[in-house]
Each structure stands twice: as structure tokens, then as C-alpha cells.
Length: 519
Image: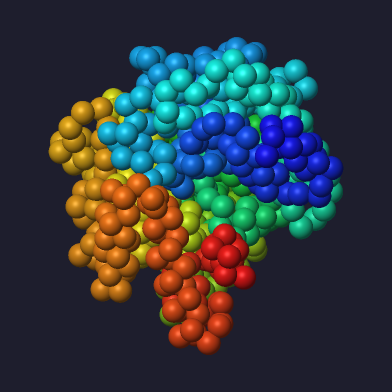
């Protein structure tokens, strides 16, 4: 197919009714099909970093990475120049995608070409499009001209995608653009809400629904799922965003200090009270008070908290004056407070005051492929922290991450990859550092069936790679297709049951069936 045909396909897509992710993916696929290259990425500016939105030829975890411009000189050079920036194979600048190309060994990445172009929308920098090739010297003047044309089309693609998102803002069942921007701003500081699973989309819709109300919210979920991040998002998206968000860890409050911490005290109220002191309620006046681990409060502390929630008035310890406060309450607990009420360990009246709008955060094991995106995020963080040029996942690691149950959720994943990165650096040779299965130390915790899956994937990869005929991704896809077909037979074609048996999110399972042409 001639270059003009690929350009025409992109132009035709501009008039099609496509959601932004599909639009971005089709654009990237058209570019990499038209030009000589092994990997292509569409990246959006997010603060001072570039966030991949669509990739072709890169590992799945690359979508979870955030490339800080200060640490990636090639990407920084691309976004600061209006034309096409070409890095020849002899360039000494590190490539951010080294080790992230699918089905390629680290040793094969010593020589390759790279080029990219900044994308501007309405006169403002939006992001960039990049193209990498494993063969040296393939990006000549003709390819650079074609890249420039694709970049201009890319600006039209992202502009149309933005317009469709703006139109979607008028529909009540979608996140509006302003709210999405606020959520992304929260995610800049924290990582826990990275994910594209149905469960995470549902959570974000729920956050949008309740954020601008004054209702008390009870956030519940297992330890390590990111309850404080949800509280931050609720505050950032509320009308109180410019006022304080005050956090108090109820589990760390001794009973004798609970009143002083929550309501403050006056000088001389008790031994050691040398000055007047505001409590958390007064500090949060006009803003949001986040009561973390509220289920740990003692019975007497629960009674004192209930009184303030009922009256809206606080009285400092040692004072006979009351202060009116206007505070929006967000509480969190990893306990089932409804069950605690039935067991008599938590006051029913306080529970109903706190749980006006409940929000459930799904555990990581129910978020499907989100674990791979989060792994990419943590790997990039550890690469930067350890001063490594590159840090990637080795064979079988992706499958191990997806089959492990993660009882400690996102926090456990973060710590696991932090330890693995240190071990990989210790054992690594050369500039490319690879996290291997033994560094993750998860195999002993995985079910026998999962270990068999991982070993089969590794064996298929080892058999296929030396022949040069089948890529690592193709080997994995072939094995995945056979496994899914067997499970579908066992479940008599019940896709929901098959997804549960495989430990996959239903939405991601449906997309996998489409990609593997099993629908």
C-alpha cells in the first residue's frame, strides 16, 4: 500500500465516530504500517512528563510509564522543536524505549534510529509522536517528510478526540473533561489510580458523581488500595479544592489525646498544654477532613466524633466556648463497618453519619491488566531513583504479576518491584537491567496452574526466538489463544466464567478475545 493510502485512512478516521483510545490506536497503527519502524508511541504532556496513550511494538507496561523530560533528553529535544527531530544510530543520547520493544533482547538494541515530532493543538504543546527502528539508516529525508505529514495529521486526530470528549461531557454517564483533568492532576503526585480496567472506570465515575456534593463519603477497601488518593481526588474535584484537606490517622490516636487532636485545646487545659492549639476540625474549616482508618476509634472516641458531626460545633479541651465549623467529611476503613455495627464494635448512628455515600475501591487482583500498567510506572520510578539507564521486565514476569493475588494490593506491588529492581541492579551486567522472575520472588506464592502457564510461556519464547520466525509476543498470543480455547470448552462457552477462571477482568477478557480473533 502506498503512503498516500495510509494518510487517506487517517483522514477518513477523522470523520468516523470513534472513542479517543480507538482513534489514537488506529492512528499509531497506520503510521507504523506506512513508515519503516519497529515501535511507535503517541505521548501526551502531563505536567513535566510524557504519558503514552497508544503504542505499537512496545511492551504493555510501557503504557504505565511516565517519561520525565528532565531525565529523557531525546524526548525533551523532540517537544522543544517544531519540526521532525531525527537521532541517528550513532547518537549518544539514551533512548527511553531501550528494552521496551516487544520480542527483542537487550543485546539487539545497540544500534537503531529514532525520530519524533512535537504535536501542538490550538497553539499549545499537546505531546509528541515517536518512531523507532532497530535497523540503522532507514530514516532518510523521504521518511522525515512523511513523518512531518503524519505529525500534522496527528494534531488533527488529538483535536478531534478532544472535541468528542467535550461532547461526552454533556452526557451524565461519562466523566467530563474538567473532572478528568483534575483526576490526572491528582495522579501526577500519586500512582494508585493508574489503570484502564472497568473497575477503575467505575470508581472514577463514582468519584465524579459525589465530588461536588457536600455528602459525607465512606471509602472502603483492602489495605494498600489507595484510599487516601481517593480522598485527595474527592477534595480536588470539589468546590472546596482551594481550602485545606486535613488528614488524620485515627489508628494512631491514643484515647487520651483524641479530643485534643480533633477539637484542639487551650493553654493549661492539661499537663503539657503550654499554648492554645487548633484541632483538626478547625484546621479543616471550609475544606475537607479525611478520617483515615476510622474503624479503629474506641467507643468513647466514636461518641465524641458523633456529637460534632451532629451539631457542627467543636469545643476545645479546657474551654467553655464552642466554634461552628463547616467541614466535609471523608472517612476510610479497611474494615467492613457494616459488619462491625452488627457485632456491636461500631456505633450504628456514627456509621450512618459517615456512610452517606459509600465508595468501594477494587483490590488489585480484580483490576485485570492494570497490574502491568502499574508495574511500568514503578519500573520507571525505580529506574530514575537508582540512576539506571534502562529497567525492564524479563520473560515470564508479566504473567507472574498477573497471576499473583496481591493481598497487599498496589502498595505491595510497589515494594515488590522496588526490591526486584535492587536485586536486578546487583545481578545486572551492562547498561540494560532486567528484572527476572527470581528477582520478583513470587513463584513460590503462585498456584501450580499459574506456574505451569508461566513455564509454558517461557518455553515457547525460548523455542521461538532463536529461529527468528516467531516473535515473543506471537508466542505468548499463541499460547494464550490455546489456553483460552481450552477454558471456554471447560466452561461450555460461558465467557464470564472463563474470565473468572483465568483471573481476568471481564472487559479486558472481551478485548483479548477480539484481539486474538476468538469472537
